[in-house]
Length: 312
Image (cartoon, rainbow, N blue to C red):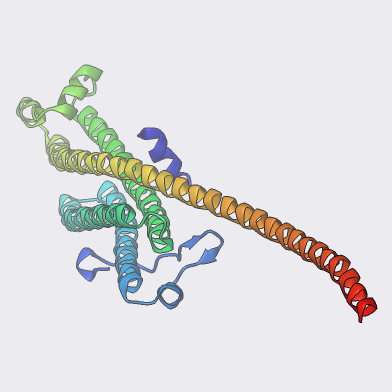
């Protein structure tokens, strides 16, 4: 399953946020468009399919734009000079992440539904050119979506690590002698508020500790939010890996069906050539037999005619 996912990785709704266009898919050396396929196949069946493909691409474009904005807001959170600034960026981040995760779930569900439809079509008409086009287009779109989600996950993981580094620095402002184990306990648990409260009460001048405490609390919430987002993306990757595996099996089945059709066609052509050869041979034999019969008739008739002429 992981090998198939790696193999495929190598290679619209305004409610979700803002984003630009998405590149056209090119398969088998030619660009496939609804008009071209509809003209060749005739009917709205493939036109509806390409309409759905366009909608998925539009949603993916929105996701790509949101990822850029999420990265920008993460940077603003890390460079915020006040708690208020950090909270404002955090609120925007939360909205963007929720919208992006919802859009990703929407694309995943549409790709899964498309995969189910392709399998049904494959069972009914495995040799259809429409089925091959649908499966290749679906495979291309799935690969692009996996790449996009991988990019999103990398951004989330990168800033999760940056937030952890920020918490570590802030912790050492108040407690320079803190051990690594103590810092890890703060990062992994919810005990930092109690620890910092104790530090603040023990120090006569605790302005720096108060500021550090507020920052750590905010970053700690960011870390938890990112961990939840990363876990959600991990589940999405698991779903997509199953889909990619199924897509690979479907493409293998199509390839086998096409190869069998080619073999049958080749055999039929060979048999037709043999039939033509036998037909030509048969005609030659018939011509020879007719010629021999004519000669025999002449050999028999001529003497008879000569005998009758002499008798008369």
